[in-house]
Image 1 (cartoon, rainbow, N blue to C red):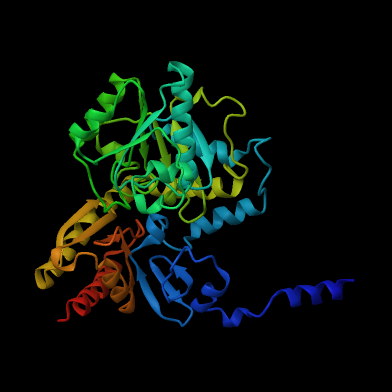
Image 2 (image 1 turned 90 degrees about the horizontal axis):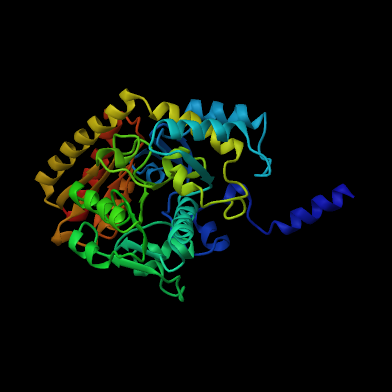
Length: 419
């Protein structure tokens, strides 16, 4: 019987041996919703990556602000290995020790009093938006259901979260969209005042827009958003999926603002590369998620929580957070020096190690060209829209690695501008 099964499996695997895996394989076997680069990464260590042809790169992209400790950090490997030999999954019919330990650390170090675990930032936001509506319905009635969010925002890819995100390109063809959502210009308090009312259940915002172009709002804007929520009995929801977990030089970006949200979503760097997300909130708000109102099969699984706890312990150290701010300034000065030579950037944006180099009018819409040229010269960078180069490297990246990565970026700039 066994040989026949093996033969059937062999026949089922139509054609592609592991040795022949390439970028072309993607086009053959994957749904075409992504358009990945031609290089296929196969190994990472710290802030370096190697592709299938053995080429080495400096990683200034960090898996889109995910690999907060770089690739294959030994403490993360140890945490995963230790937990893998204990318990993988039991379902939420039970709790587990890693989830409780991680939740306690998140509570002890933030405004939060309660935690819900999910698998991703989109799921954490889905939980946040559902909780905001449920809380408003419980306390003020079902008519208080409007969510106010911002153009160029990004909150995930579920139908609900993509509808709250204010980018039409992500909603086209998926209509009809969930209703009760309004969008206004980010960092425009007058526009916000015009739409917030007693029907508003929540204002949803990134304390720094990521996908929208690395936009840092004025602190006064954030403070007045908080005041509007208080005035209209609405909740302030911060999406810190990208800006959280030390990325800005504080454990969470709200800590720069003097404003405390009612709900906060976190993911990406939380697991350092292992899929996990969390929604943080107060006890008062959390009461609306009574038994059965929301859930996640894998959310809070022991593997993810064990890894995330170790990541949390490493990031939440004064010397690491201080280093993030120091590296921000180091990178900024290097980018300004590049710009003095080639005059391609209009502005260097961001906080900590979530940075954006906005292209000036002469190079508008050409961020991908710069990204591709940088890759050819040995470094990984990102885009934040068609006209902003984004960098979100490991929080532990060295100055020497920064120098090497930005030297590759400069060569890429030189190629694009034709000098």
